Length: 167
Image 1 (cartoon, one colour):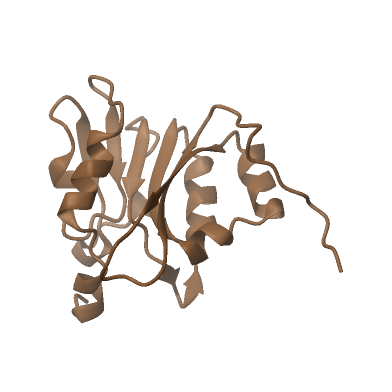
Image 2 (image 1 turned 30 degrees about the horizontal axis):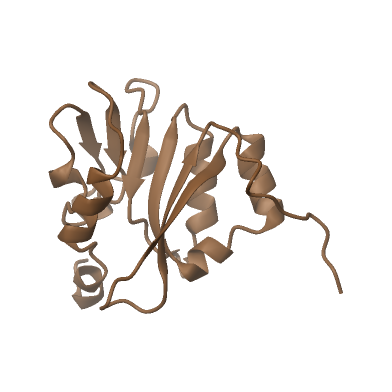
């Protein structure tokens, strides 16, 4: 149901355009925006890519997308902060990391980003996905710091973590 909070959390079109303009896109690359909302990313993707979207408000759920039929190269989106009342950022990254996808580009807030604990990052890394790039973003109308986090198949030894819990 589209309510005031739905519209409040739509990615600013200018930001989506800037993010898109700072990404290298291959000709005929298959791009999926799984949480399209009002289409800030989807509508501005370059013309040389094949673009797909899902949006739960339109009855199109990302879990129903046929990843076997369409080989998606890139996921790009501002994913929901919560699903069923819980921070879902890690679960979404983990879900997409199990698909045959080359990269995930998510706009997220500081709370989502810090949910990537060492143990969770290990699970993502075990699926062959790594944090490859982090870009800070200021969105005046939203609370806190935001990041564009790019996950890819290229191992990144600059992003490390301890797996122990310390007292």
